[in-house]
Amino acid sequence: MTRGLKQLCRGETGTPLRLGGDARCCSSGHTTKYGSYSLMDMNTGVVLTTHLVECNEVQSSAAVELEGLKQGIRFLEQHGLTIAELITDRHMQVCKWVRTEKPDIRQRFDVWHVSKGIFKKLVAVAKKPGCASVGLWAQSISNHLCWTAATSGGDADMAVQKWTSVARHVCNIHEGHGDMFPRCEHGQMNRQWVENGSRAQKEIQAVVQSSRLLADVRQLSPPEQTSYLQSFHNVVCFFGNAPVCCACRLILAALHFNENMANEQARKQDRAQRWKVSYPKFKKGGAVVRPVKESHTYGEFNSLVCNKISKGKSCMNHYLELIFYIVQAQSGAGFS
Ligand SMILES: [Zn+2]
Image (cartoon, rainbow, N blue to C red; front, side, top):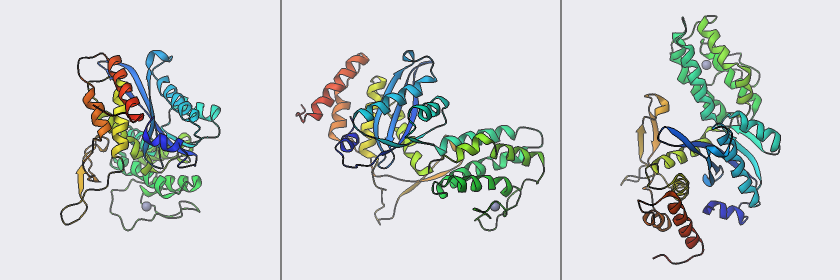
């Protein structure tokens, strides 16, 4: 049980949870033997629980995600917590399960996953004859989805109008989008516009206005929330080479993430905030400006666990060893 979960169980928050959930493959060699599913409290950014599912436990590797989610929800409910909202990707089995088995939970979609899917579709469309200009707009249109989610305040109708306005915007038409969002909010722009009525314009419109996508736009989560989940998965990757089994790696990652997630932005000697430019893979060469956080800390508990896990033991031994030290730590026993 993580520290964040302990606090919630003690009733320190008292409000139903808003969770973000995501799966991750834990592959070894060429096979994917395990998958993990983690649930994060979106109000605090704390990883509450993370579950490892062996592919043999379920009928297919695609079912690992649903099984991990089920175990995570069951675990939280067993600790007396109620869940109001769940942010996930658009995994079909997960959507069906939440809709039928957990109707009291409001499911929303991770805007990052949805926008990534739109970008891929537009890049594919750009390869069709006469559609090269679509490629020039793929990133902007995908970014527009994030802006839509961030500025619609959870209003589904507003989100749809803002989103569909982009199909007109790319043709240099910036008015007449709808009664809730009548015109674009940007200033003067100098872009390579798509010709209205051209094949490229029709292809963009087909992607933007697909009925499945419009249904998903109505359920988008604000984008700033889901970046926490991506950060956690980066931490899991950081522990990827740790000489321990998948389960231990997940627990270590959650402990480390929870200890450092609230780190403040680092400052220079003159107290000015520090920023860095990075080039994440998903941006395909595009730059992102991010704050530099204060140095990570590896608290007494974390470092103890890390130090005690030595190389050359079987995964089960590692796991038992880790559990032993967690129990020791939670009981307040001294460390040697
Ligand atoms: Zn416009």
